[in-house]
Image (tube, rainbow, N blue to C red; front, side, top):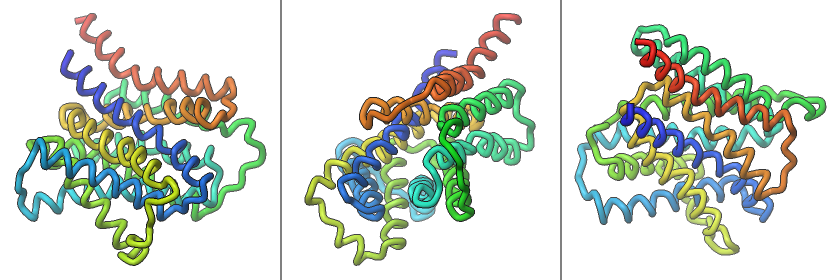
Length: 295
């Protein structure tokens, strides 16, 4: 039980790191930085930090096949950010975050298909609780008339699917490798994809001047280094369904950080949503303890 709680905590903390990103991205946009600059600074900084960590603590050569598999996991993380940030350009943030958090049930479905086994009752109940909490915490109610854009909606759903794939593969790909080594080669995948998307010319034109390096360092630390390391530590030792549920910890942190840093108003319904999400995350653990106590 202790090991389960410890590994669950790793995944939960990794998800919480993702929750900081939206606020930092908004701050970077307010300073005039563009989407390409933010993404490149995030993955470039994260890659450099992981490179230093690997050279110090975990030097190891890997095969081309191993690199390919880990790079693909990193591409899932990168595409989550790219598609989500792009969706925000055409749909309200409240809608985008609710669509992103569809990764909770997507992850459960992926695990059920791969394992050819129906999810447990506590997992299904937890997903329903999380979806209710996400709708409330996302601030949809009271946001006025909401206009959905097909492109933005599909991009946000694509972000959710990529997030679900990242959680799934984090627990299954090259799990025998040290977390630092795995995380570094995952970040390589994300950086390679960005270089292809933005072309090397755009990549080289990004300047660290005017304070971009500060945002890049924070985004790299909390968007690449810490979450990937923490998921690498915890996800292989728990089920994909549980890891996906714990991943919902991102939204309460996003709401709290935006309130503290950006001074955004958080309604009572949003706070209720945050509480419901936290309960939904804890529910599988509570149900597991109750089952053991009744044996």
